[in-house]
Length: 134
Image 1: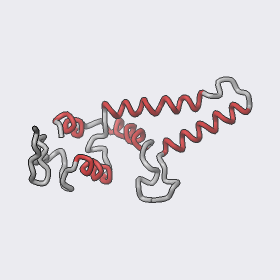
Image 2: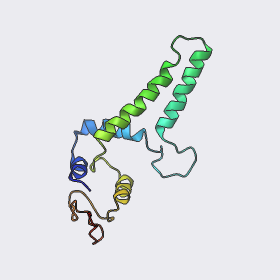
Image 3: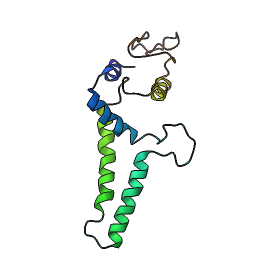
Image 4: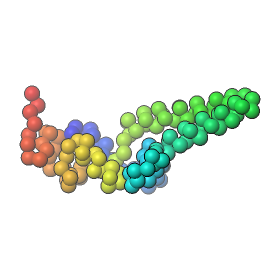
């Protein structure tokens, strides 16, 4: 793990900013936060996009000018939020426990790892093994 990633994980935002960021993150999380295996437990953004599509369809059927705008706005929001979270990803303080577990799994870190008491540094040491850098 690079020092930049660890630095981003430890960044602290104001409580108001945390609430706004959590709402944006939740657009891309299943509605029940992985507590259900139902096929309807989809990301909120999927439901928003279907809703915007149907609104655009209804406006088009009623011959309203610029009926495409609701759907286009949804398609603009998606890349804007992706780009935002590319540069300002979720911090350790903001993550739920299942998100922290997924982060550890992605980076192949031990289950008790936290960026606050990072015992392994950025050398790539995981479970007592040092990986070659050659």
